[in-house]
Amino acid sequence: MNEIIGSYNGLVCFCIRDTENDIIFVWNPSTREFRRLPPISFMQCFHLVAYGFGYDSIADDYKVMRVGCYCIGRYYEYQVRVFSLRGNVWRKIENFPCYLFTDEPGIHVNGSINFGGVGDSENYYWSVVGLDLASESYRMVPLPDCADPNVKPMIMALGGRFCTIFDNDEAVDVWVMEQYGVKKSWNKLVTVPYFPDPMTVDCTKPVFFLRDGAILMEFYGLLVLYNIDRDESTIPTIYGTRHCHEVEVYLETIVSPNAYYRLQAGHQNGGFGRQGNKNFLMIYFAGY
Image 1: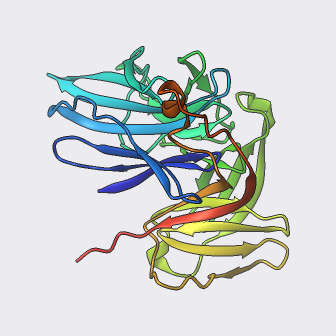
Image 2 (image 1 turned 60 degrees about the vertical axis):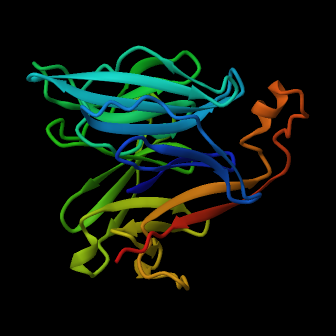
């Protein structure tokens, strides 16, 4: 299994799942330059492993987070590691403060990687926990009042803002947090009706909000462009694929994933360089 872990400032992090150890790359699609992360110990007793990728603005460093869950008797324990591109090493940090039940990648917003999970053994309500990459400490991120604590929150990033969606069987309500961590800043952005294909309603997420009043949605691997003013849905033509496996938005830059490593080795730092347009990265894995 292969998955995109996340994207920030032109760098895309993705993982190739393996039975013995996961292979993780940080890649710049614009320059085609990549960096393969050193392997990390992989416990065969892991129940699930989830990753996150983001940027620590205080240390000017990109970091990869790995949360490994393993079962001891009837109890779950967590092992959290963080990889620093600047330090080129995996480090152990404080254990995750709640229970994860999926291996979905964490969502990076405002220097934090966020996961949906439930509380301790006495509290099975769903909540969102964010890891601040600068302090490497956890915080609770409030959800809108309309969120059902008994239902797993569907979280993501939309235009750099923390986002959650609610499925009401006929449409999808897209909510955004205008100020990260502030509950009062939640605002319902748009309600998007289901695309008229019953096979596409199993998985829905917003991808990008366009300036002309349209929003790009992913319906179970199918990209759909919804025009809010005209209340119309269309499918953009993408040649060479049927349904995309995963979609990620990345900013076109010349940031080098090897810049910090080269700096330590006595070479010139590649720097951040020019920033360009936002592009959509679609990775399609063909099966047989």
